[in-house]
Length: 313
Image 1 (cartoon, rainbow, N blue to C red):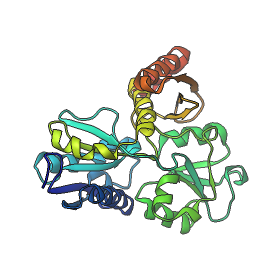
Image 2 (cartoon, helix red, strand yellow):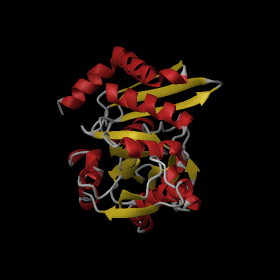
Image 3 (cartoon, rainbow, N blue to C red):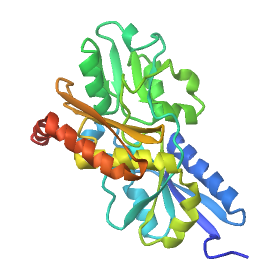
């Protein structure tokens, strides 16, 4: 007999890219394991962010373009929840929606992918490197000014195809996506946080629901991973306090080490010529406080001027 917390049917809204569907299927299978009597289905959808591929994301409205249609499906009662790669979720959730569960993290680091070169240091001057994020662009321009950085849009398979066609000498992708799709062999090297500090939430999956759906909050609660949640909450609070969006080159990465939460963060100009970075330790229970405090440290050290410059561009 079903208790109030045991759902009879669950519909997951998802983008239709191969990686997004893997993520939705992963959550579907976990929910089926928790609630074997429930029917768990996936509602595949194409978002505006998937349709516009000829311009950088920072120019067409940002990360919210990947989730709007999924949220409409939840509002209309066609879906109960949506599964997101957390690095693609805006720092401010729309009114009426809640990011309720964060699952255990896959490798959160960036991956160097190339068919002819072993790593960034092996690329010759003038080599073309593709990336979809201003964060990675700023890091590359700061550390490897001799390289040519070009925008790279499309789903994971499209990006790999563009590399294989010779449009790029190398591309930088999230390691987590490659690992999840069984493409780990395409990774030539995983970049260390010192080489490329990850984006807030990178490698973690978040489950979004309507804020009014207490029943949904209850049935997805067992999917939550406490350590990942503390780390991602700190990262997102840091980004949020700096107005983080795809228009701001910003990295934020936390781990829990010896019982302490260690948060590193930076903000930069897209050309990489100005960059402010720092780190902070604290109690994991104070995750969002640590994130906000690190943001204030960066503002005091010069990030405010960078943010003002970006706002007037």
